[in-house]
Image 1 (cartoon, helix red, strand yellow):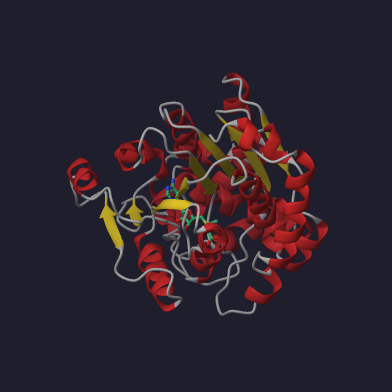
Image 2 (tube, helix red, strand yellow; image 1 turned 135 degrees about the vertical axis):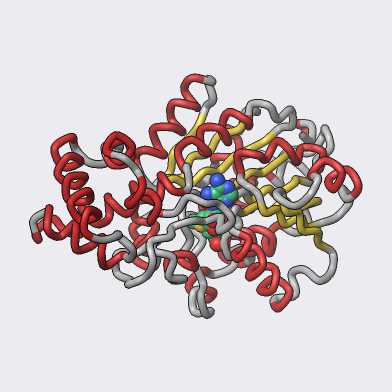
Length: 356
Ligand SMILES: C[S@@+](CC[C@H](N)C(=O)[O-])C[C@H]1O[C@@H](n2cnc3c(N)ncnc32)[C@H](O)[C@@H]1O
């Protein structure tokens, strides 16, 4: 941290923000027109805080735990590149990483100054030790393993950590069975090298296992009815596609509430296939092992994620704030409607919250 005498007065920070927000930050409405653009949820809340952060520190390492197609990263990198010493960019999904690398090359954000680390294929420790001087690291790994890459940062580095949880628009549109509006095989894996798919869950899980999947989200009674219908269906034929699953669901639940049930059941399956809740818990626990100063931004989309984050923050005495998207943001980016942005740090960050 810069010493406090060099930090600007509260009034001047506010003024600086006003100027930068209008003149310097990318206008999301403009960028939204680009093909396949996924609006980075609550980006202006994040950039406002980062702008305040750059009033008190000179440099930071940016860690994007859920790179997706890089929309948060592109926005943050474009606005703060003079402050960022290293970009550590993770995703479980290797297709997303490869696509994003191509996109970033097209946009001339990267050239050949990057390293790709594939956790399944490489000796991470060796690779990280030998290559810790690069600017961009694309890491195909689960964010619960972030701690394995700690050799990429120096002791004195401040870390800005972002995790935008769940599934990306690219993955939803890519026909992997995430959406009940599609007619595709029931896959739902972020990491295509793992064995468990939604097909396996629906066709191979026994009654008790199925109950553990769905009772997280559905009532006891609804879970029981759904499981009975799944078992009845699979006695005759396999549940292969989203349309097979939709047929089962529409027989059990009334048309009036069907969309709500479809959403909940698809969410429960996605959580199971990708082990989302356990990975989130481990990710948070592992943050405690990081000795560097860090500020974390976590975007959650449903109450099961929210509960885990809140429990973690409370039981570890973190001060935190929780932000909701504005009505304007929800209007231009519908998927943000259920988002909550959790901001916490392992240092006193109250000065960074001005003008939020
Ligand atoms: C909501 S999208 C992120 C979108 C991104 N912020 C953007 O602006 O383009 C979530 C991404 O996180 C990835 N993901 C989900 N769980 C993960 C985990 N445990 N470890 C690493 N990546 C994960 C998914 O593959 C997906 O690409």
